[in-house]
Image 1 (tube, helix red, strand yellow):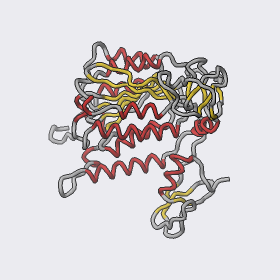
Image 2 (spheres, one colour):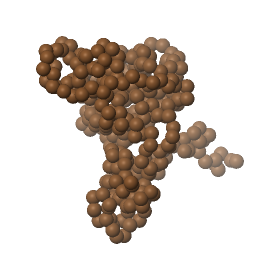
Image 3 (cartoon, rainbow, N blue to C red):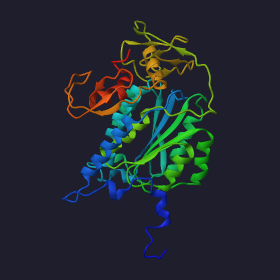
Length: 376
């Protein structure tokens, strides 16, 4: 074949199945691509909603996640107005609420990385209030310096290596920098994470980076680049579902306590707030050692017993039998079975009870309730 007749280059074949920028991001009359991005995000949500989730597989229900927040100078960029830092903080607040709604017995820790150093912002906890207070304490003035992926991974590994083998250990990195200033060989750190079965995922805010792609591929994580704030919310929502568990992971019986929420009349300190008085006169008493807790789920720091409520445990196991995706159909008349809204164009039909729902109810059933009101 002549050079004039050759179409593209060999290296372009690696991106043939990926995102075709020229087809997806089409400029409008004013030269803007905002409408194209909005259409792409809407199509991605629709595709995720209609995708059938696998059944009868092992899932990492007890999730322990360290979230690494890039606080380098690149976070102050105005590419996502008002700034990447503000957009990420808002997305994280929303993610925490949805995450603990879907994973009530999971725990999250926060790590910040700036000036080539990684620091732990919060310890691993299942208390969403502690995590939100830590995020609210940060400001855009806190950002500066360069990002170090290796230091962030090493700190996350140090916090996760002591976890029991039956839990799902994960790292989620929110990265705006286009470079990583590392003190050593980053690939050896990635091999360590792979050997310890720590799943590393990343969400980029600038452009795709080779090292992040290789990290996610080696540890069976996910790596995506956010196009705008709405797309960032969509990428965060993908991490609310528990990942599949490796066959090599341990299977152990776990001792769990179910304390009652009661009024505590005796004077006592709370293990959640050792430096201050309890935030409420009500609390939870550990069923094994009698330590006082402000909220559950939590792991008692005294006797290491996992404390949960029965509804929380039930919500955690609903992922093992997910609600099947509804079939999208064309509807010219009729109303939604749940909210009784009149259907004019499209509907979503349950394959078991054959009832039709609107788009909003379909989203609510699959993302929050996980049950069909028409099935018995």
